[in-house]
Picture 1: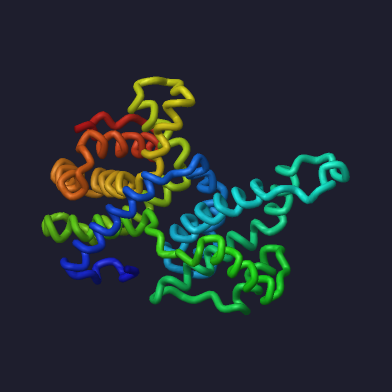
Picture 2: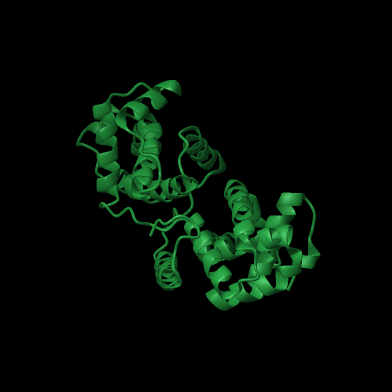
Length: 299
């Protein structure tokens, strides 16, 4: 699954695309109320900086974010649903929720790093973070832990995820869609689009709240969407296929606007996502990238 960009054959691309589409649908059909809660801007930036500092493949950062999101939802759900020991309430006036969050706070930095390290181990072409490097890095950012503690944290994350680590991440969607696009339309400069897409994806990830709020306003035609509208919109914010085509559309507009309509049309054909939905996403993202409205991106 984790080939470098440009290395997959057409048969593999077809299989990858079908697999990604199925996993995206399964994910959207099983979203929890906490979906996206651990994709905060500061948290994602922290993970991106870790991968950059350790010279890891960008895929590692995006994959670590997905692992962290899945693990923390399950971990907190389990902690909050576990009955307090008998008599604990009388001895401790603070709420059980406060106690749980205090426990998580003390080990959160290690959980984040464990997700990064686990993600790095899944990429055969990525640099592996050995124990010495891991302990040294954590020490450099103010956290002194032993190798044993580090391994115990990774095991906790693994068990929490039921050892299911092969979760597609947004960059995987972007790269597979780009390769399929290049295969179907050889005239599209996908090799040049790739680095631009990587920058756009990082921007959209870090400005996730603002970009998706703009898209929500556009979709609902309401400046102040209701709680119910926001709740229903979660399926849009978690749709990796939409994110993938939207990022490519934005990159195309920036790098090769003459190919805009051709690319959007082909992306719609590949994914079944309407050209208007792709254009709306691109418009929302471009608005925040350049700070102005791009009416020309409308289909």
